[in-house]
Image (cartoon, rainbow, N blue to C red; front, top):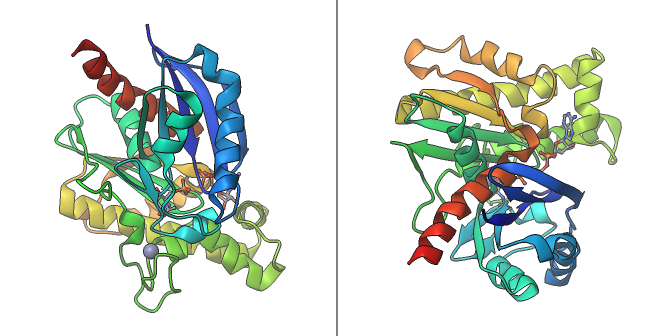
Length: 296
Ligand code: ADP
Ligand code: BMX
Ligand code: ZN
């Protein structure tokens, strides 16, 4: 049985673990460096890989950003402190001397969540986290696209008069619904140190200003689900990310979605792999590729 060293790079945290036959072990986590300098990401990856390297047969990386031929092209560079055009596959291969597979984090998580379904051909995974990421499985196939862009529905329009998104477009879903957007809305009220988690805790404690911000996020995500459902005939949507998994968030999304016409509605549930969806999914996806490569 092959052992995969899986890495999940998000805008807020990097996780790594060994995954053998679907079992996750030796999981570690660190804060994602917020720097446009490639050396900061190089160092972070080195520190995550080194302790696990001797037990790994190959490496699978799920990362925030468009992954185009192994290069991390940030659609929203703000989410990574300005880092862009980072040679992710090449860097990890150089650090490990192993075969390295890389896909987008939400695409990877969608693949993991799809494995936990039965009789589902068309589904989406949506992460509400530092950004808003989406992975699509259509006709039982994970959509990646020829340039790795498939599924970046967090950059579809939510409000033409909304804030300018880090991708350059005005009013993207991400610019209103993400943990970063929640934090930004909270900063106007509670100051510059406010985080998405802080606003969420205020909401859970009954604060009305926080409630407005969280409801705004959830309403935008419900509309995104409606748009994806009516265009792709989705049978199921799974919600992940620290905001998506936070207490009560799913219920609000469902509440807004239930007000839409039936054809726009999907069954929405929490990601079963929770915070490990990216790690598990990229390991499963890479395992298929690795088996093909080593058997040919
Ligand atoms: P990543 O984007 O690296 O995958 P997360 O899924 O943890 O990371 O998302 C980070 C965002 O989620 C941040 O905006 C953070 O403030 C927010 N967050 C973290 N923990 C919670 C929580 N318990 N409840 C609500 N929001 C949270
Ligand atoms: C952004 C984009 C996506 C990513 C999504 C969720 C960048 C750097 N990332 O829309 O590729 O899937 O965020 O990422 O442009 P996370 O960091 O919130 O997990
Ligand atoms: Zn955008």
